Image 1 (cartoon, rainbow, N blue to C red):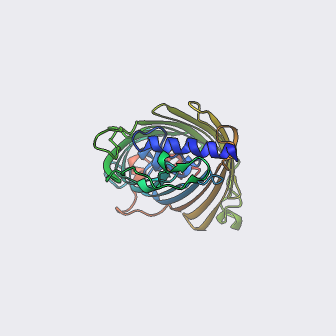
Image 2: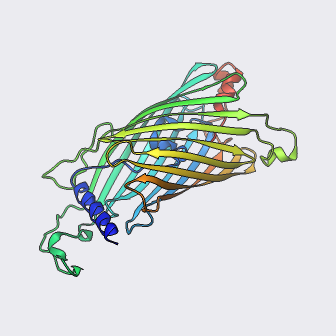
Image 3: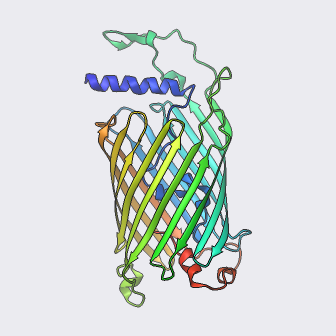
Length: 365
């Protein structure tokens, strides 16, 4: 019990500091492949069609804190758009500071597609966001409220600041490079992005400033297809003759004084996903987590599917032992054949080369 009390006091101290100065990273999703636009706007419209993604994360469920994150995005890849890229929107909601501080981000994403060779294509994207932070000063407990025997029993003499909301614009930019081999059995992706480009001030108080540190993201992943997918049997339409797909990946994030690394592997066969991922904070109070993932992809029509994924973060060492890890659930709706700007002319854009077809196939996720 004493250890838990000390832990809560430490978290509360971090929370108070966060009201004036950012001391931690933005919320991080274990299923970064389910929240691609959140990490890199260049992923907007990376494959043709419409995709809507939902993600919910509950972090440290064993502690009396409200660390929950909610994500939604919808993006359209239409090669008849100017620049042959994509457009999208994103909403991200997050609680920080033991739940006393609430963040809301509304964003518009635009990406441009740049063909390089028949087996290589690049996309460059930008994100413009409106960020809002709100704080409930009444939820804070200060020292004059505490009794050494009975705890929080007194009324505080502290006069809370009037400012309880901060709204400001924010911007991000990124790029991805996508390549495949001639047979289409391998597709590789390399991405680089920077968020909070102009380091906006997120302080609630006019007497101080708190620049939001830039966030640098690098990720590399690949999709390896082993075996051939059937195309004529009734099982094929249900997805039960799909080839085995392996998706190893690495993501590195640096923000302020904090660095995190995530590396792992997903596999899909018979429309079932299984995966394992290792995560480490690398700096500060180092903590290590192993995440297990499972999911299912249901194809309800030609070019249309819905995917469910669940992952659980298991702390294996460091300061987060005993917190309960984190639960994460994602849902993705995919409509590969939807276009809003006329009939596709993608083949003519690339001279009808088959390498282009492989690059336009929907990603593993």
